[in-house]
Amino acid sequence: MMRAATRLAARFNGPGVAGLHSAGGALSQRSPDVPQMPPCGFTPEEYRGMSKEQMLAIRTRACNPMTTKVTHYKKPVFVHQGHMQWLWDVDGRRYLDLFAGVATVSVGHCHPKVAAAAEQQAKRLWHTTSIYPHAPLHEYCEKLASHLPEPLQAVYLTNSGSEANDLAMLMARLHTGNFDVITLRGSYHGGGPQTLGLTSNAAYKYPIANGFGCTNTMCPDVFRGPWGGSHCRDSPVQTTRDCSCAPGHCVANEHYIGQLKETFDTSVPRRIAAFFGEPIQGVGGAVQYPNNYLKEAFQLVRERGGVCIADEVQTGFGRTGSHFWGFQGHDVMPDIVTMAKGIGNGFPMGAVVTTPEIAASFATGVHFNTFGGNPLACAIGSSVLDSIREDGTQQISLRVGTYLLTRLAQLRDKYEVVGDVRGKGLMIGVEMVKDKVSKEPLSPEAMNEIFEDIKDMGVLIGKGGVYGQTFRIKPPMCITKEDADFFVAVFDRSIHNYMDRR
Ligand SMILES: Cc1ncc(COP(=O)(O)O)c(C=O)c1O
Image 1 (tube, rainbow, N blue to C red):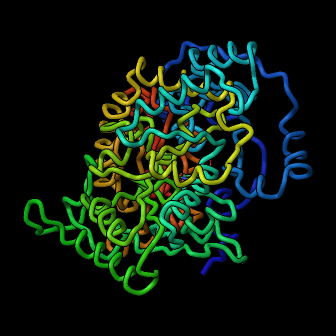
Image 2 (cartoon, rainbow, N blue to C red):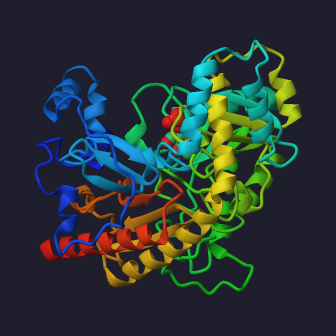
């Protein structure tokens, strides 16, 4: 069994940050064997910053060792500039960014409208806190609340997703008077001392006391889990598992809900504080639950006095395409919604939105956040919401995401090592296996080879899953069908190359 730290390193690095980019890399797009990248009319600035050697030296010396550990690729990408779905490295090579700084750049790198809003606000007032009424705060809270259904109208602004989840956990405990919180295995809800207990992925755990009052239950993963079929999930692509369920009836869901009931019967007190669920698991590898799982889980949680928390850090702001929030795709109404990442298109922001009743319970003490709700963040957040509407971001997510999912499913049918393609909108996972029968995760070494090859052909994607076995595709939601075609051609070629070598 690989130790957690080694596994994390293998997932992020491959064998280690070895050499520098030499000629080739994304430049090899020009070779006739390599798929042609769609054109881009934007010209980046010429890079005049420090050398790659200098950056690597400082990275090792002055940045913390974790920075080296999480560095992607044997030959890292030294990023210089971004525009919408494109990134350029310091050598002027262009990349199609399908990972968006970990599902964070929602409307596009340096989106002109958002950049202009930031510049305007930065010139007027960068910082004051919520102790003074200021227009950007009020405009933003009202605008954000208008994107949520009643009674979710009380907005708290934070600086990150971990902070938002930390706050949500505190609110749930105060409101219910209960302590225990349940999350799904494979989930990621943050890396702070409190949220680490919610997170259920050994790679991110430390051998210290954490997670007091946090219990994980079986993840209803219809591909890798013990139960699953061919109609379980809300995605244009189903698993290749057989299923004889009658319409409207899902045996897999019954089994997974049975597991949750068993957790209630064995692992927590009769009354609990909360259940946290990502509508689609992000770091876990775009894992989707059977239809109705969250609906039934929410009911069971409420019967035990708990509140239901939707962690929309990755799934919010139109990423799932069909809805603005991931929870809406499950036809559930959470008591608390947490969000971050896409909220600020890369600006450090997060939020918790809850009901007036929960807000009232929390108002018994004083909670203060110096930067949460500062004018710059609020101006950017407002502009992101406007851009999502004006650019049709959610609609792009649905249209291009559905197209990409369907094309990737063809590669699943073509290659033995592509086990599952899943997701909704532009929240996509491709789970890699040694073979389709055993479903054993593809090794970290093989994953890294394919990952590096894809990067060398000019596309950046992510990795995730409990075993680091799933490629994650969560681009800025401004990509086009041509970009999707390019990526499919690159992915096809990289797996072909891997199969040839194997
Ligand atoms: C679903 C989910 N929740 C919470 C977090 C934590 O957010 P942050 O890294 O902004 O603290 C993440 C980060 O990846 C996430 O994916």
